[in-house]
Image (cartoon, rainbow, N blue to C red; front, top):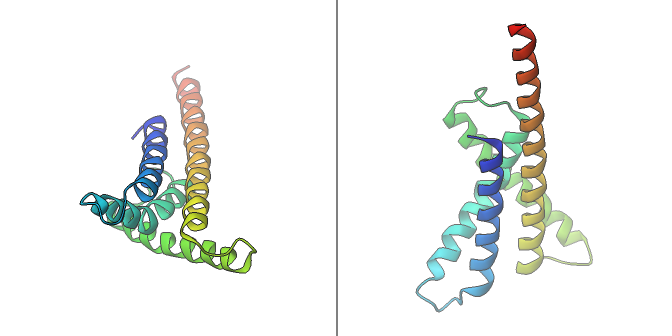
Length: 131
């Protein structure tokens, strides 16, 4: 997947999750969307962004990437909850949603930069080899 589209999808998913969490009431029949988007956002997305940052494309197969994404997501959420619990902000739905969104966007942005630099490096090497 292209780095540009990958980063856009992550940011769009983060924005949709925030919108669903804050603007769909709990008694609405559409509240299932906020639960599904929130569960995936908490259990997969932060770890997937970190895996994308740490590993090159093609180094991990799909199962390894999925297992690492889930495990790292719960670790990231746990550490974020720990820091929020120890801070004067405290653990609330708003503070956890905002802090996790910031973490996801920062990790995705760092992975995006890494992928772009790696792509530029590969293109430069390909040009040097062809000359």
